[in-house]
Image (tube, rainbow, N blue to C red):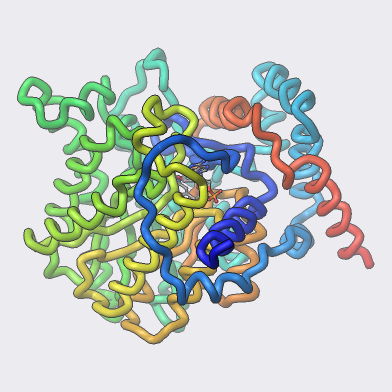
Length: 479
Ligand SMILES: Cc1cc2nc3c(=O)[nH]c(=O)nc-3n(C[C@H](O)[C@H](O)[C@H](O)COP(=O)(O)OP(=O)(O)OC[C@H]3O[C@@H](n4cnc5c(N)ncnc54)[C@H](O)[C@@H]3O)c2cc1C
């Protein structure tokens, strides 16, 4: 077995051990949804590109072991352990999971809220989400990527998009702003506090989103396209203005204070989303500004992703704006109709592409600092191997602005053992959680979908192993 193959296989094992709860959540169609996959690493038949992994990084990663959940679980309250125990019971086997999925719609909202919502959702309203932010701070997680979860995938709820835009802007003022300002006032170094993010899902910010994104350059759809751009711009403008205002007050800050984040969609919609991102980058990320206000998402399980990003990089450089990236592996592997044609042939290939691209971006940011065309990077992953790769690269010498513009991100309630390990054992400060929030009925739908989408994927790190870890942590606490 070649070194590269061994490294890749190890990466897969580490990645799959990274969280105990991952099978609860998955990609979905919400304003800003939660995306996690525990896809088995079987091959498909695609002929994909597989960039060669950086050997220096890969050999040092051989030493990284996935962290045990027990240390993290020891920090939880009895109530939280009870809720996690419920998840452990539900995911004991396929039968219990299927049963839970069937019963779930009949469970009253108040019970769902009491039992599990707090593990995965920030709350129903800004006050509760602020409290969630305060609790995260106690764990060493200085900020959040907020995602208003109002679902209407069937288009039956007649949701008022203006309301979504208004509520999203409200969450900047009433959640992200107080959360950040309080920390900046007392911070020894203002760069130690991660930015606050707003996740914007293009398909939730315009009526008939699929058609609008598919026809993004079609004259006949210009009015709807403008509406989508205006809705995203309305939120990003608020963020841009706050960034400029706060930069005057805190001139030593080298990273954005707030960031609008465009989420990635299914492949056929992505051409429209890339174009939307470009328009927002041009408007809100001028090369002349030391900080960006908008980032887009690239899904590195796509075979053309590295090339796509390279093309965007060259275009941005030529046209005088910065990119801003959230890098993910990609959430739609189960539902992409042309999976074999567009997605990497194996899990290992996705891992190699992901690690290769984050290495390239981080090295560029470290070398060029505020002059880097990449602008800002969120390493959005639960994969321990990838997060350790980023963390180790950031330990190397390089521009401080470069370092402060790389932030690690996981979903609330997911990969908490990874988050805990990065903070406790590796001194990581540049870390955030993706926090879905919204009306209880919406978040109930959202939690159910997470269960349904994972009905075939009871993971080895849920069920009994999770219950055992909880028992160990209770025993260790009382010992
Ligand atoms: C903060 C945050 C924001 C996110 N935003 C988005 C978003 O906007 N759009 C989006 O699509 N996703 C998004 N995601 C989800 C992301 O795409 C990943 O799917 C998810 O996090 C699981 O991957 P992982 O990196 O955690 O690692 P792992 O669990 O190590 O990897 C699992 C992933 O590997 C890939 N994979 C698995 N099997 C195969 C195979 N046989 N062949 C090829 N590839 C395979 C798939 O992408 C799968 O999801 C986000 C995640 C986070 C944490």
